[in-house]
Length: 327
Image (cartoon, rainbow, N blue to C red; front, top):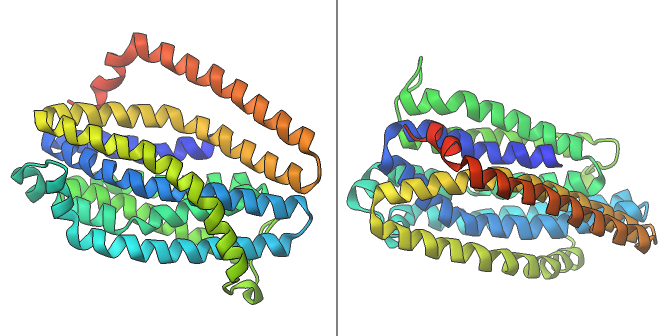
């Protein structure tokens, strides 16, 4: 799960590495769009946490069919949310950039990036939710391999679409959004294939593909707290980006690069917390609360050591880390 989160954070680092070659306006576009995407990440994280917990609980109870039904409800909820969020964001993406304080030049050059990134946010939601199903079932290795596929595609397509290498058109910063969307979408398609084909722990059968209102409402109820928790934190990030945008594209570019680096090193700690969620759910389902408690304490300790070490590293090596990403 830690490796899975490292791979997820690579999307951000790879994008900003190549976009940094296009100048401050391009990086500023990524930063403004990413701040808006953070609300979608909040929804995805909140839904995925409850999905992992519900699936893990059923697996711990030796009820793989119940786990599959819970997974289907998460997919239904994710698809509906993707449409509700994606269509308005695609239509009003340039207006959202203006609302965030983007200059006319940034809106002109980055409108296409924002349309693809925000309009295609459903790929992010489904990637989160489908991997949450695998994590809850204890198939974390599958989730990791899925992100390997997505990242390799993104890694190859990013420079090709940004700079027009080979037969690809030169799309500038818009190419970065298209590369990421393509990589994630192919990853989502592979997720559905693996869920329908089945793994060692979970498989969604044709007869289980139905809407179960009772399970769906329970999933929504459990998710709301997590969504609200992360939405509050990410809303503050949007506010900070809006303030930084007042100082121009260069300041916003620097802020964007710093945030991408921070996210890259913090996401592995989410991998540890995802592991804790799986262990807690499965042990509670198996009627072993003492083991669930032990998993929480161990995860907290490991995260403290990891993030403390990261903080010390940043204090001494911040400049050498940032320099290669903006030249």
